[in-house]
Image (cartoon, rainbow over all chains, first blue to last red; front, top):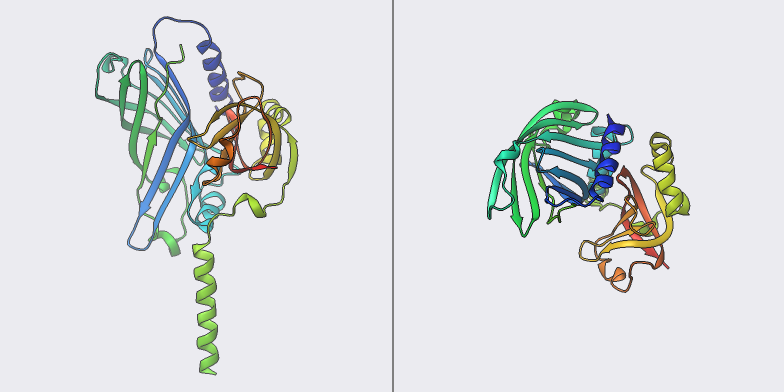
Length: 186
Length: 131
């Protein structure tokens, strides 16, 4: 599946090079991804600025991916535990979402924020789970920005957190994605 | 005796607190595991990602190449062939934005960074420019 994804990306880039009249595809390789866990004991935040987002307005297809080792924490120990113990990022370097929205629910000519429901599959720590979230799209002179926010439970992805520190980490992490302004790629 | 135990516990607490508060290591004090060109690194991942992951993933690398794209605001530079679909992306350590202000596409540079893997580009984070 990983290889399919990357081949898809390459194909996407290649087809983007061909001149087409209508703007309908967008790509970002500077998608910002943050997650946060707040408990009375500890606040954990991490950020990754190197996420990849592919968005096709015509088909309604969305692909988002991020490298787990690219998340930066304020504290070295958190970063180490996140990679070594929880996410096992040597074994599972990527987190991926592949989803679909109703292309009829988005109009590039409409101003202001448009909310779309995206359903698909989220793969974290090598575990694939169905995932649905709302995303907000906004257009300005054909440029597009995509924002999404959702919750995930570590246990849903077979991420084992020792009982000793379980209360330090919220049962649900808040994840926020922001693509930044993207130019149409065709 | 009691005094000794108190001092010992205090010492443990201080060391523990220090370790807990410690920030992720910057590139400064890291030994470079591999030194190679941007083209060689990209080719390694494109040829056999699993093999490249086991060799380079999570390692500090020194990568030489020409800048093909840059985003000073995001502190990002990309090394590779002009207009290539895939490059080596280098996210500079926070506070180092100014060091890339003098650079422009086409310039050859040497970058030290932490390899976080392959996702369209080979990604280096916590990077810094080497003289």
